[in-house]
Image 1 (cartoon, one colour):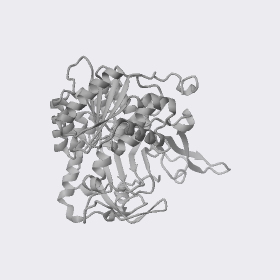
Image 2 (cartoon, one colour):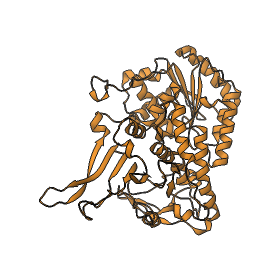
Image 3 (cartoon, rainbow, N blue to C red):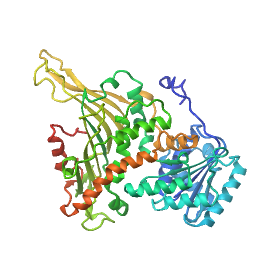
Image 4 (tube, helix red, strand yellow):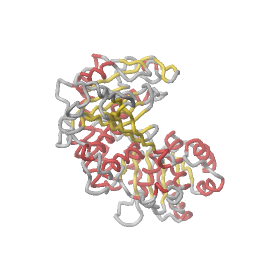
Length: 509
């Protein structure tokens, strides 16, 4: 939709088109490629955001020819792309779609890949610009980076064709492994060639946190400890682990959701205004927030963190088995499927304001939001019963992306009764279109060389420094067991009790 068709888009930044590029996807037979990566690239092409000279090469162990890969990707794009394939557009897209069979640890596979890419360059006029997207099991990350470098697939020169490497999460499993992976990557790549992806940063509403705060004059002056009582950040999923027991039982929700997704949302919520929107300035401010996190005091972890496991229940009328009945889960596992944290950011803006983060599987419904809960008015002019709930500013990240403000309003009638009401903004109704997928924006930014929505090494380090202490404490107290909650609810009772001790309560979502 162009600006003339939608007046609400008038004045927005012009779309940018990258240089001719080949995107090589390692792990091309996986679900992420089928459901997100290739559908996102097709949508970018359909919206004319890709250059005419463009190619996608899938790399995996699977024996697949170009024709079969193209047919399979067309089916997946029909299911998951925002723009469904038409014959004209798909025929244009599939001409640049290839599959390369290889082993991730085999130098011969990379030598053959280099020859294939050089031939595609000549055929498509791409001139050597390449993005390597490493969407594989984490153990393969360092292997792929090393093989790319040692087989001449990484251009380290500052000028000439660019080489960029996108590395999927998790970036490490603790502080030590994250530092080791960072050090390994930096022996083969420059920092400006490394794109550590967190797809939450590509979500439209997450980006709108910055716009809402820094492009409007009326809320930012209230965005501090003078007016905010506490902040709640929720990342709830209605599904259980659904066949991912082998991975999830080793990871847990703290690693899978909090260390990356929710910490990034928290950093954008709490950061100071950046000097500019450059990658350096934006990420500098996020790092300051993560470095200001108050460490949980030794011996007091139970006051600041609650974990839980779901037990049998139902979500949306569908039975969910007990976590220990899920395939791939170790007998007697204490891996958490729910976690809630109480955190403080020790700086001038947020001193004394609790940040509550919670995330869980098999919860009442799927929802991700940031809620700023305001302090009560300094004087109850209308009586103690006048307002039953505090003012709340809520940014809904998914689903039903939008922003709502909850405030008190007089109930019509002859008495002075005040009742909380909501004022809503929804993306779909205001802009007449659905927001783009996160992987559309993030892959496009990588091709453009914009790292603003990717995480930097010191961000990863600062987040793991906080999280790893929690895992260490849990390892020491493993024999105590883990509280449980019924699938389809909002977590264990201990989570509600943690807020109650401070006179607060989780929002009803």
